[in-house]
Length: 133
Image (tube, rainbow, N blue to C red; front, top):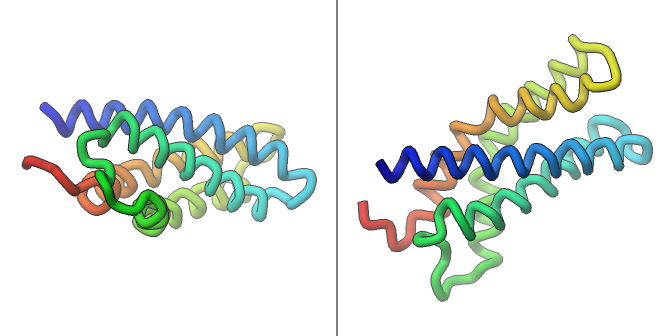
């Protein structure tokens, strides 16, 4: 089933995004703090997942001849629901969990919280052109 393959690929791309998110977060947190760094790391991860999802998950539906910037900003805009769930889970984790890896756990839990909303937004709103069904 096509949607199952897309979801699995989306999840694999999400793991790549998770790694980018955590690395950028831990690099920037000493400069920006855990909360501001999380905003930047989320944008880095979202940009990474957009590029991979565009190339692999939804390749047949990526903007053909359309504006790549419109698609990119549309992707970021439609990820808002997932981003709110993601950031909320991250903040709650930082408040409830202590230790060196609390932020990484928060990123992981946030990613899981936002994944379904992000998948549906990407599939049906951003990468819907040229979809045959």
